[in-house]
Length: 71
Image 1 (cartoon, one colour):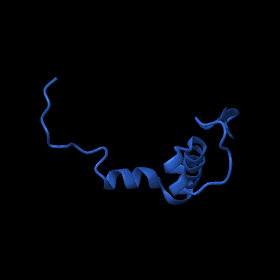
Image 2 (image 1 turned 180 degrees about the horizontal axis):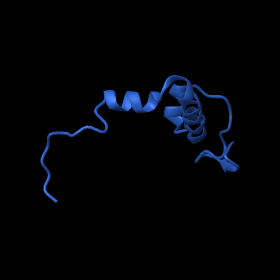
Image 3 (image 1 turned 30 degrees about the vertical axis):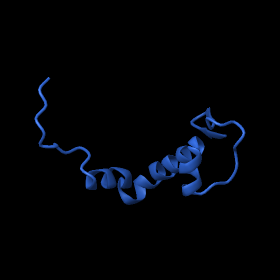
């Protein structure tokens, strides 16, 4: 369980609530691990720019695909 901005966040699997690494968090789909990671990235943005947005742009997010889709 994790608390951010006066709200409580839980994992989809209530039986798990311990320390975990990235590999296990992906395997278990551990929600609170990614809430904590997102919060850390958000807090670092003032010191180093916006690292998540920088990486997303490296993967092409926010750019035109070059594929014409009507409607």
